[in-house]
Length: 98
Image 1 (cartoon, rainbow, N blue to C red):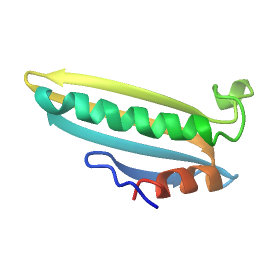
Image 2 (tube, rainbow, N blue to C red):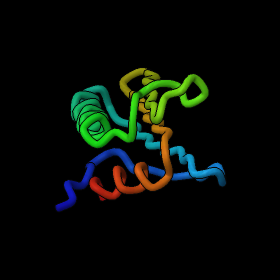
Image 3 (cartoon, rainbow, N blue to C red):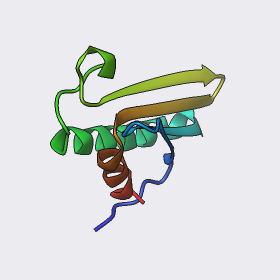
């Protein structure tokens, strides 16, 4: 059963060698930031539970990794979540939230 995300929408890119990158961005007012952060935590917790191996930079031996950035401009916050890892794993991960 899929559990859709309210704010984060993923865009995928494949490096052609079996590794993918999934980027999601949400731009929200400060009052909605806790909800977006909760979505990020849901995605990362699911990634950890179903990980393809150790988390860390791929060029340092990690099987997958994730990065979260938050930028604020007044009352607006833009959050970006980037996940990298094996293509099939990432596609299955993101599909759980569609």
